Amino acid sequence: MIVNSSSRLNGVLYDLRGPVHDRAAELERRGQEVLRLNIGNPAPFGFEAPEVVVDALRDTLPHAHGYSESQGLGSAREAIRDHYAARPGFPAAGIDDILIGNGVSELVTLTLQALLEPGDEVLIPSPDYPLWTASTVLAGGVPRHYPCDETAGWAPDTEELGRMVTSRTRAIVIINPNNPTGAVYSRRTLDAIAAVADRHGLLLLSDEIYDRIVYPGHVHISTAQVAPMHPCITFSGLSKTSRVAGYRAGWVVATGFSPDDGYLAGLRLLASMRMCASVPAQHAITAALRHDDTIAALRSPGGRLYEQRALTVRLLQEIPGVTCHEPGGGLYAFPRIDPHVHGIVDDEQLVLDFLDAEHVLLVHGRAFNWTRPDHLRIAFLPHPPVLADAMDRFARFLTGYRQH
Ligand code: PLP
Image (cartoon, rainbow, N blue to C red; front, side, top):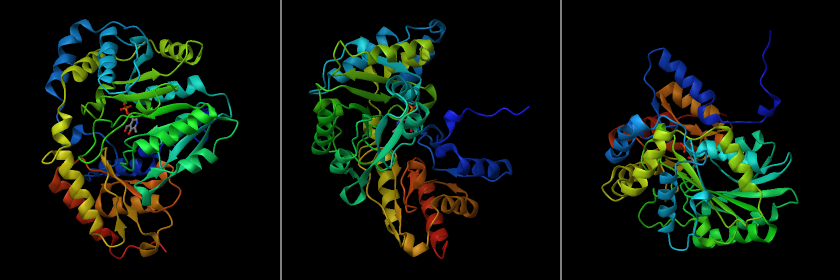
């Protein structure tokens, strides 16, 4: 008997945990230690979970073994509501406008499943966090990638974005701060995106999971702050800000909808079909949003993320043929490897060759729906000596490396 997967999975790509990941796992099975800089998972690199968040989870465990409302615990949604109410100009949201999920990942899938008819188009940045493209395809939609311009600090090309709208376009995805580029969008950029959405009646889907991991000199602005009257779904969660990716805690806030919109009812229906998000993790959300600001020290001068970002960018820049735009937010550097210097035609092969030679796992730019073979993503999560060693190994590997 042959059991095939659904044809709905054709074209669904999620290379962050794909072939390069499999090769790393194979090396590890053979006893080789691999430094995994491929995923934004802070815990393995010595980032402690904030005590107040762990305590909330532990203390509520004896009472958190039943289902909650499918939209989420009232107390957690109140904490989310209050969190956004403190943002100047963020449109007022009631707890009925909030939905808690098992991480932002689950909510990306649900929001697109609730939205798209077969063939509907979604405008997604290139490069992107690939879950957005994969989930669009899985929901029967067509991802259309709008370019971001490295020479403009990876800002989206909003004129091109406007030109890409067709009669089938339903939504614009914004990832701000961006994964993988680290770009933090200016008000001007967000205004221009919102104007396209307004002109063509498109839903704004704003993934802001790194909203509090923004380095000095940059300010995060929520899309909903610049477009308070426009239908917008804002996504965030605890995985990065509170470094508890394993808890699986995320949420969406819907703003700018009118009572006649059927969309949110559809989203709630889908949410009810999976009962609810993990209830202990919902208690952790309340504690994190009310009492945890440990991320502020990590992203400030002297803090681990601040220093590791600076070190990564500096060491990358020192490698001949490599340039790197300094990320304004998030956990990643997305350097450019000059394809002419190293004759690179296949960036996945580059990642595999580096993994085999130096046992460090990165992710190739193509995995982020970037079309040219000239970028890699590095999660700058390890302590500085480990990062410096990884960058040394990368420099050594690239010396003399040529594909063609
Ligand atoms: N959105 C972006 C931009 C991400 O980088 C990630 C995880 O890396 C997610 C969503 C998923 O986060 P979660 O752990 O909440 O599912």
